[in-house]
Image (cartoon, rainbow, N blue to C red; front, side, top):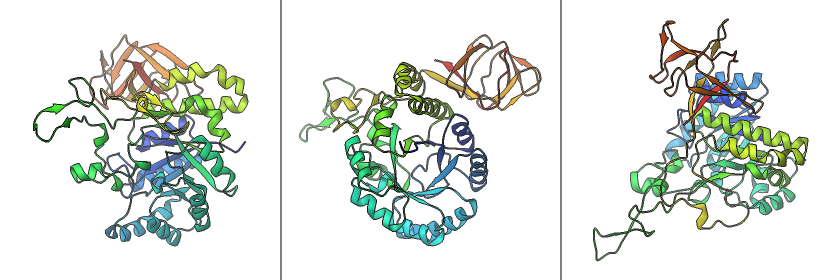
Length: 407
């Protein structure tokens, strides 16, 4: 079998460290410009330098997105951006635009280029085209089946890598190329500013009956006719690996550390279990299903991997996430008494049960015995976001452990 990479998104330095801690082989991030997640926190130059150094010290690769569909006015800035990235030494650039690709090859030819899913690569001739130009990897169009990906693998050079999304939000448009956001709000999805109109509620109105709205479905709430379920291939790791996919990519550069920890840890264990033995993988299927549902999601689908989608791949009655767990925080320090310090993300109180995520896939449950603020004063709860809190759980934790609470 080919080596399988687990590729995890990171919206910030904190989330990058979480991805590394919970099992990522590689992390993809965006700078403050030229990526397709302009609303994500993204990385300043200083954070990017620290993140790359942190990941490299632990044997983890970092890929930087520069996958906008560029306009004339972007090109000079893109070239200067690449000159700066060259000094930081990321392991690859993720690019969709041929002009941006040519600038990358001119400015920093020593940095490998991965072709973004935005480039709509859906056949092996396209893969070979990019390989001849010097790309080392292509991110598959999301509309491909496992059979098509296996055929691509058979018809491209051994050193050409295939990356494919296996988990996360789906887009209503072909490989993410969408004009809805630009049409409705003037904010282009192809420049990283998508307002996600595919998640909005829509009605039908007959021309001669203005103001008389006809629900697309027979109810009084309208319908979310573009609202796809989230992709989840955790149960099909054998099929994914068998198709010759080199990198299993998780969507979510705007998601929290809780999402990243839950997804990274679960896919890490599933890949490793299958590598040990197919039987071990099958025995743990229930575990994978339960753990992957502990991150936010919109119901799950297998997307196009097993053929064209049908009406069951959509959600028609709402656009909200399913949320079974709340993110409490990440252990940043542990004192001699075993108390751990976090900057809390959601309110919790003395006496509540907290679940600690261990990187090996296990969870440990503790009751909060006591809480202290940053000055050491005892408090009954932690109500303020990002408040420094010291927690006594009656057990010694380690830095990097993520804390969550069942909703």
